Length: 120
Image 1 (cartoon, rainbow, N blue to C red):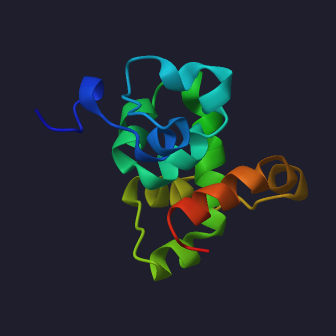
Image 2: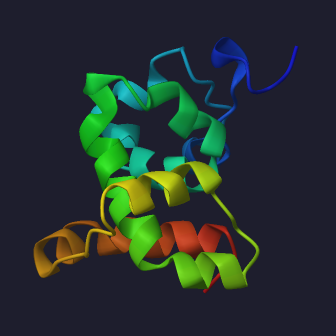
Image 3: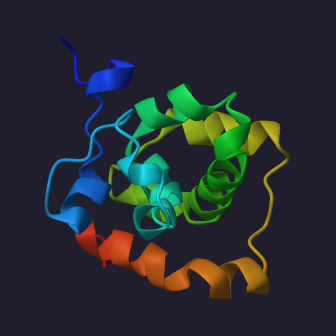
């Protein structure tokens, strides 16, 4: 089976943080400890965006992923880290701008993700 099947989707960023494989559908990423990192997982895993796109439970996480990816997309594109799912949503939503509140709330998670991807 493909790793992109809902039950078999391995989440690489959350797995690296947890030190063990985290698979979508086994509820590990719904807990508070890993949930706060879910928006960055969506940045690195476009297939996860497709799975949660219409799920109201993950709307806030998806909105945060769109906001951060969109505002730093030139950096991601320069590094070859394309996410067509988030690109399309970013364009559809009128290119929302990252404000100070959002930046301060998630900057450490974002930089941890960039470091994990060896972008910074």
